[in-house]
Length: 131
Image (cartoon, rainbow, N blue to C red; front, side, top):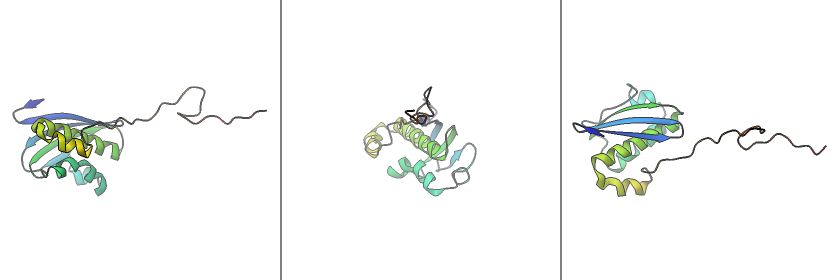
């Protein structure tokens, strides 16, 4: 979805959902109305988030506004990465080959397996005794 050179995309990972608005600008990024350094204090998690921009060498080219909810730090960073990737594909579809080769286009569909009835957990069983 685009409006006046603003590109919107949704990224998901595990239970985290990131709504991403991307527009050409100076490289200003806000996550839930906070700076990335403030929102993600751990540098490795921030690096996960900015991988698509670093790959195409456009870290200072776009202003990005992100609202993210659900999941933990790593899941939210992965969702943001997916959202940024999808928004970049709306800006320039020719980037698809580069981003796909790096593995950013495909959604990471791994989610927590549900607990089954009559069992202790998703896979764990109650202790079995023959007698």
